[in-house]
Image 1 (cartoon, rainbow, N blue to C red):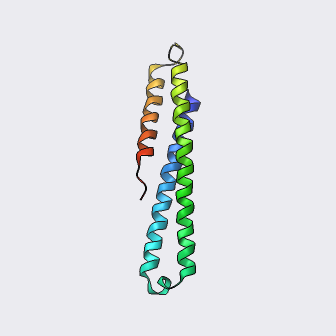
Image 2: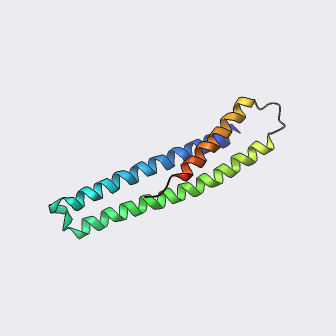
Image 3: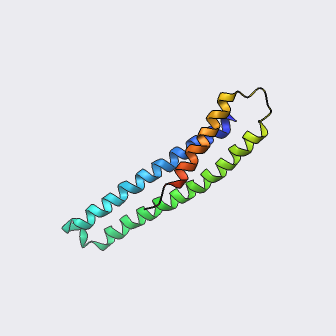
Length: 110
């Protein structure tokens, strides 16, 4: 159970970091487009768009991993439902990570 929710926690963090990186790159592109010395440099602008596209792909991949990890943790919770060696607090922690992960999945793409 701990392994399943630790994995989910790590993937949530990876998704959040990917969103931050994407937002930083979008801001960088917007600044470049406003700057006269870069706005006419199509090569650099295209490079920046490529970086943003890679960040979005990374987010998509992490979201797929997150969905699989949620399913796995939900299955583990079902499997340990009657296991008396698993504490109620551990089950609650796992359920909270599932909720956090679902909220992370709901974040809208820009």
